[in-house]
Length: 509
Image (spheres, one colour):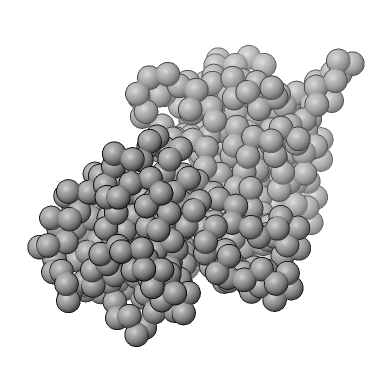
């Protein structure tokens, strides 16, 4: 499913009105009705419920006024409060306010007919609050009286439905603009917005329903939107086929260059992740201590030992030789970022011509000279968590978390695919961007990223195109965590590895 930004949505509405002669008033009418239908689906019979509709002065408030009018077909217990000056209303919002008044609804003006205490009582008495205060055009910090009103809703409301997005969220980032509504249900129009899939907005959105309001699908497709939510139907199409007449090399050879005496477990998890998604031949190049543990855990691993406890330039020729015999490479988990290791990583990258995934310490090693990525002669995937990405781009972690625009720019500048890990993982090659919503907090544990590297690397070795290997990998990895039947967070990372086959099976069905 595609994602649409606030600006793209406004352009789509403009095109609908200008090229198809479908007026904005028609779209507003459909939007308001869609919210009522969604409430009926979620709550059942609305006739015994009381509603308080909170409306701003923009078109989001106009949608809310249409909601209020359509609710009157179900119940007489509909109240409406306008926040803001009528003089500042958009024409469509003013027209719908007049229609509501003609129906005899008592519409109160906040600050004139009702104060905060009175509004608090109305919120407490109402079964459902309809939030139509702020829409996709919100910019800057939410100020009083809106911030006080939002606080009252969050304190006292029993059930909240937000129109298009929870008021106080920034549409294109999911960032809270000082104070934001926490909704039980959000009904958005045409397509989801970034704030619905990126935290903290994703959490405040509650259950998301996407409503058709009369904009033709062909018009949406004509915009060539470049951002999407990863869906099961998408990944099912790219899951590698398992032909009967096959052998181990049919399913790819993955070289994992990872580990050190300091970090023994990471490379093992990477190798197991690759084997679990069907890679036919996984070779681990690491120190002797890692190798003994790895082969003890899974004798099917092929192990080659280096001299010493970590990598240096003396292992370069061996690593390049093994790379030539492989279909894809994972570089980085558990390497450490000591100077001689970084020297090895930089020289290795400049000489390979096979697809490579760089993770963990591999990323830390190149953080002082990210331009080395532009020298690699083969597809490159990087899989940073926000801290690692912050080091790559020389920005604070909070500035890079869920920052898809920054990830897209980095991908284009360095000709790489970025997998920016998080509760919503972002995959981008700079031209197309994908959001993974599958997974849970069991993945917030050391080692889960090492498994992901192996999963993506295993698909890459099987011939899946690099971007699609990332999309498929993050989905399967996330889905595996959802297969754990006990409380979130109690899963061992080794158990995550063993749940991968169940996730693959679900994708294949």
